[in-house]
Amino acid sequence: MAGRDGDSSQNPPGFVDLNDLACSRVGGKILFATDDWFAVAENLLKPSPPEWREGVFTSNGKWMDGWETRRKRIPGHDWCIIKLGIPGLIKGLDIDTAYFTGNFPPKASIQVACLEEGHDAFPERKSEMGAHSTADQIMEVDKLSRLWTNILPMTALAPGYSSTRHNYFSVISPKRWTHLRLNIYPDGGIARLRVYGIALKDWAQILSKKMPVDLVAMENGGTAVGWSNMHFGHPRNLLAPGTAADMGDGWETARRLDRPCILELGHDGCLKVPGFEWSVIKLGHPGTVQNIEIDTNHFKGNFPDSCVIEGVLIPKDKYMFVSSQDWTLFPWKTLLPSAKLSPHKRHFFSKLKDCGVISHVRLTIYPDGGVSRLRCWGLPTDLNYCKL
Image (tube, rainbow, N blue to C red; front, side, top):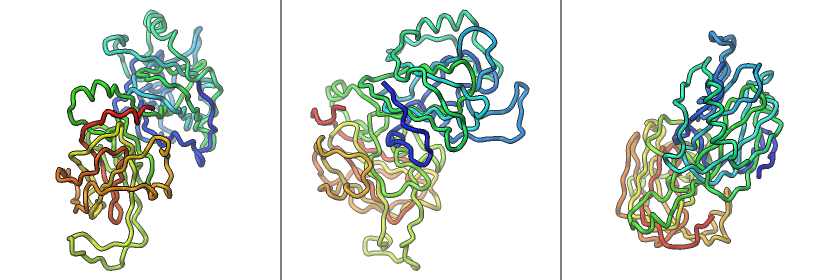
């Protein structure tokens, strides 16, 4: 069900632009780990890149930014259970062994399951270095997860040098998953686990309620599919749950080099600039947008001056992923005309143009800058268009 996609940091596979369903920022959680001797399993789900601290040691050994178990001296192998923050379709994996060069696991495998609420009872988690689960706990949880579905068979890993640290694997699985078991053979350390995919909602139930939902939200299947620039922050951050933790938790572009030397205001009160940046978001389900929120939280000296939002309904057979040039070929309709933005503020817009049913929105900012969150509240439409 999974195949290796190479390990080059310079040419990662396309699935790395999807949402990380396991990240702690979106609610991913470690439920169980056999051993946390050198470093706890929670580090696997950190949104930040792994770091190295030269010469730093703890009472258990070298400080490492990842999950690292002790050298095993008893039968078996180490493993942990992860509850995905956003259940959905898994499209790809990155088992990142950064900085684990002489202590990475030789092999790993991954199993998955779809557990309903209340059917995921695991022992109380004690997340601290030096901790380990008892033999009885390991046996009990192993019974619960032993027969889970394999999406990555036992596969060799590469060490955590800069050129080999990313162990990418594409996944072909049409099912929705909620939990994951990471097995390492027999022990060792992994810096990060990224589980890239798309949320899969029960839209039939949502449609029956006829209530507005955030059609672009990550947890509802919203996905960033195109952009002009993401120098400081990926546009998928726009769709994340909750409010942004900092500027790194939003979409931020580089400063455009075609900015006028002296800025002037236009008749509409917005700056007169020749350039702009944009990102395209695929809605989790086609629908009609009624209200929009644009949040510039944390962007105080680098917020965009203004923005425009457009919508379009793209037939399934015309859908593309990350094509910077071809997005201009579609018949975009204005949803939110030019709107002035302010620093570090939530902006709400309810007087929108009627675009009808749309499947994608395009956020264009002038001339550049950062936005932390985008919300598009509306009614999903009863169409078979969006089946994945």
